[in-house]
Amino acid sequence: MPTFSNGSLALLLGASFSAAAGMAHLACIVIGPPAYRFMGAGEHMARAVEAKQLRPALVTLAVAGILLIWAAFALSGAGVFGPLPLTKWALVGICAVYLGRAVAFPLIKSSFPGNSKRFWLVSSGICGVVGLVHAYGTVSLWRML
Image 1 (tube, helix red, strand yellow):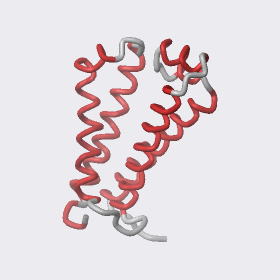
Image 2 (cartoon, helix red, strand yellow; image 1 turned 30 degrees about the vertical axis):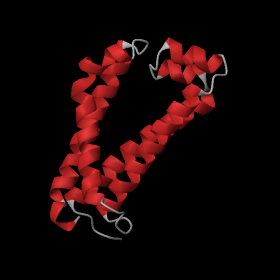
Image 3 (spheres, one colour; image 1 turned 45 degrees about the horizontal axis):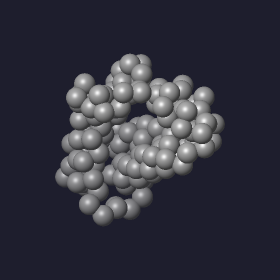
Image 4 (cartoon, one colour; image 1 turned 60 degrees about the vertical axis):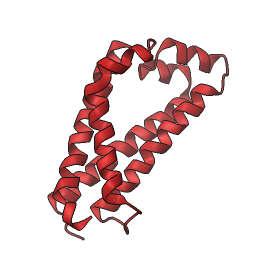
């Protein structure tokens, strides 16, 4: 069994978080309006799903795809498989997006008025933790990336 450094373990954890978030988004598409409501996406999104509009599924699929790509970059950085192009800089960008999302929610929440307060607090807290985990792994492994 390979031995992983703390930085690699952090990126493995970060990859797990990103993959889980991606799968949760895909579950919303499969489950439908109750999942959108549970995840706090807002009544507007849930009603759009009920009305069989395509936009919620496309947005959710795009977010899921991005999160799963981020998981792949974290796995690459952790050394689970060979390097992906620009892994080091992709991880820096991923950290920046997660941490930016965690702290910027007061500035962006007015653009998404249907999202619940619970959604903003929970998702921002999760983004902060995931961003810090990715940042720790990225900084720890910087010379090897």
